Length: 323
Ligand code: AN0
Ligand code: CP
Image (cartoon, rainbow, N blue to C red; front, side):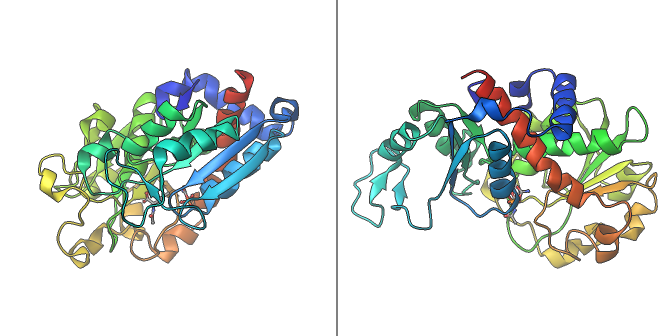
């Protein structure tokens, strides 16, 4: 594996899940793999879980870890080639990336969608430069379009908590006051399509996700109908993916107050098969989900976040095994 971006990069999913459960039981068994190896994590955006869980995973594997917050202390980076750099950017990504690569053996990068240009975001303009110019293997820690470490942790959590062999998993859009990326729902759709689950997506009209991630997943515009018999409810807000109206890309459509009936509450959970509630966090309470549901006995948000250490450890372990 040279890049961890898509579900295909991890290979056979059953094998990856088996390895994850083994690593979870025995998370310090592979310390020798990381000896004198350095992970560099580069953050262009905020993080709580990704930062802590990925660092913890690398330490479990015996690695040294360096973290760079690009927007807190590093030089401001220009990312476009060909611009005359007479503004506030002191350094170009084209020098910064190979320099970063020279100090480490493996790089994780977080760089969210910028919502300036849909093609740049959907072509992964920033992450692809790390892949191309760092000279080191790269894993995506939420890029413009994907968040694979999250989806892998979500899949591990579903595997651990499912009560029937092929559970019904419903991903529902939920309201949010600010424009959020599509990376989490894109990846979740991609991973659920590859997993052995009955997968349904529900969202208001206008929020259709890119077909490259949705594949053949079932779409149900009626949220209550989608929830019927669900075993897992996966809530997430995302802004307009701009599929049918590119001019709306990255926007919150209409007034979010008009969508508050999409907030996951006891009303939706009542028609499920006593579903587990999931969310990647951070979550805005009583916007995405009510206090009652997130605090309820079927909420998995904490074990789900804890599994981020496990998904990261499996991925980093796979990279180390090839070094
Ligand atoms: C980000 C998002 O929605 O993509 C990160 C989620 C893991 N969330 C926010 O920016 C609030
Ligand atoms: N779920 C997740 O990636 O959280 P952070 O943004 O805090 O890393």
